[in-house]
Structure formats: C-alpha cells, structure tokens
Length: 422
Image 1: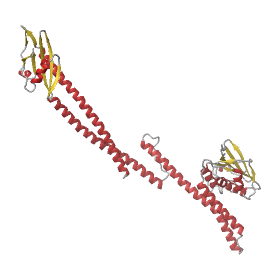
Image 2: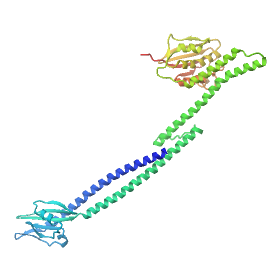
Image 3: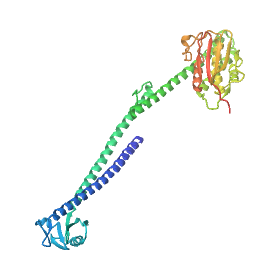
Image 4: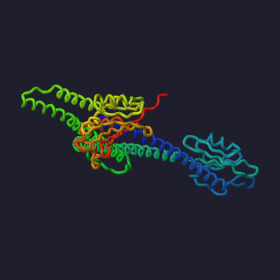
C-alpha cells in the first residue's frame, strides 16, 4: 500500500508539473502566434495601400489613378480625394468607418468586425487624398484557432506520455529497491556475510546498496557479538559448575558431606560471573559519570591478597560497577596464576588513567597477546578465564584493555580520566 501510494504521488506530481509546463508553453506560443499574425495582417495592409498609392496622381487639377485597378482590388481598396470616393466599391457594412478614416488627416488603422482597415495619406499638393484598404482577418484567426487546438492536443498527449513514463520509471526504480531490500532481508536471516559490493556510489541505487551493506555489516556484527556472548556465558559458568560437580562426586564416592565452604565459594563465583556478564551487557558511559578508582579497586580486591600502588586521589570517567567488573576478572586471573605476588598500579597518561594489573606468574605468550581476550584462548599457564568478559565490558564503556608479554602476568587497562568539576 505504501509503495503504491508513493508511486501514485510521484506520477501525480509529474503530471501536475507537465500540465503546468504545457499550459505555459501553449499560452506563450498562442500569444506569439497572435502577434505574428497581427504583424502579417498589418504588413499586408501596408503593402496594399502602398501599391494603390503608387498609382494615384494629379492631372489637370484632378486626382486620378494612372492604372485601372482590378475588380477584386476594388472590394478591398478605396481612394478618397477631397472627401469624395474616386475609386473602389465600399461595402455597406464598413462605409461609415471608411468615410470616417477618409476624413482623418493622418495614417491609421482600425478594426471593424473581422476586418482590419488601414488608411494611408497620399501627399498630393492642393488635395486631401486617402487610400483605405481592408484585410480580412478570418484566415488569420482560423490559423490561430487551429494552432491552439493542435497545441492543446499535443499538450494533452505530452501530459499523458509524461504520466506513463513516470509510472514506468518509478515502477522500475521501486522494483530495483524492492529486490535489493528483499535480498538484504534474506541475507540478514540466512547469509549475513553476503554484500552487494557495488563499489563507489554513482547514483541513488549505489548509495542504497552501500547503506544496505552497512546494515548487513551491523547485523553480522550483532550476530557475532551474540555468539561471543553465548560463548562467554558458557565459558564463565562451566568452570564453577564443574567444580561443584567434582565436589559432589568426590563426596558421593567418599561418603562424606560436601564442604559448605567449597559450595559457597563456587556459588559466589557463579553469582559474580552472572553479575559481571549482566554489567557488560548494560554498561554505558554517560557525560558526568565518574568514580574513585582506589575505592573501586578495593571493592574488586575484597579480601584477596593484592598490593595497591595508587595515587592518593584518582577519579575516572566510568561508573563504579563498571570499574569493579573490569578489575575483578583480571585480579582473579592474576591470583590464580601468580607464584607469590599480585599487585595493581595506576598512573596518569595525558587525559587517561592507566591501570596495570601484574603478577609474578608465567605471563603471556607473545604470540597470543592479541588473542587472549577471545573465548577459549589461554596465555601462559592457563590465562584466559574471564578475559572475554573484560573485553566486552571495556568495549561497552569505551575503555582500552590489552595484554603485555613482558615475562610476567601484565594486563594494562586505560580508562578516561574524570574531568574536573567547575
């Protein structure tokens, strides 16, 4: 319905514009033709008057014509000398107007019915001589009417043709748009990796193809992000569940009850993993968001043995729960793989605060530093647990996090510094 309505609107607008243009052209052409025919009629009248005037002369004190005029000319040309008709036959329908022109003292034109009258004064000493000619305007008016009728017919056909062409062009254009949209929809569901790849846009269809490619890219990224989230959830929850299952099986084989501390520890670990993943999904950084980094670090450390070397006061432009969610998995990895020591430092770098989470463990393999944040990829002696979630939180909060291969466990987190309150 919407496509049909758009098509009708475009066709209606095209017909309206074509009608306006045709109307203007018809009016302009009719006005120009009227001026041309009027000029032709006046030229014919002047030519006739000059031809008759050339034969008027004075002999023996009288005004006479040197040549006899034809009967046809007598009906359209008349010569008056001193107020008296000396040549031609004036029709009764125009006699009054002709005599009025004959008495005038200057050359002039007048219209009577469908006739054009032209009076021309002939300079002859001692006499008042006027040559008056008549031009029938009927042929000119008939020509104008025929031209106007033909213009209206051609204009109507032009408007009709414009409407038909607009309908066909719009239908073809919309068919291309519909086909591209249908392909993009189908690819989005079944083949998100497909693209139109039309190159540099040269027209509106190229721009549409580029836009749809961008949308498909977003769909593909969203699907990949969804798969990564699923992997991360499975990766984060499988380890504590495995531990709980192992404890339960061990208790079953030994006949002894499961230690409450072990169960509570793994349940807390599950709760922490779920909370962290939820924070990653909801993490956003808004203007004015800030937190005390030392306080967030203390909350992330909890009762764990981690050394802290922070400035006395340092604030970052992220929410407190986001900072905690970033640091907790990194500290957990450090504690799990450290030999004896885990420590965390912070220092300023331009408009950022750089936090280093370090331990004296085996560290990262240089070949894996770019992949340690991918699900299932580990570095050194088992690094990798929790790092995909760290990457997700960092991406959501606009934070940069990277692993450094320097012979020890080292992860660098770059957070935006909080702006001073004015």
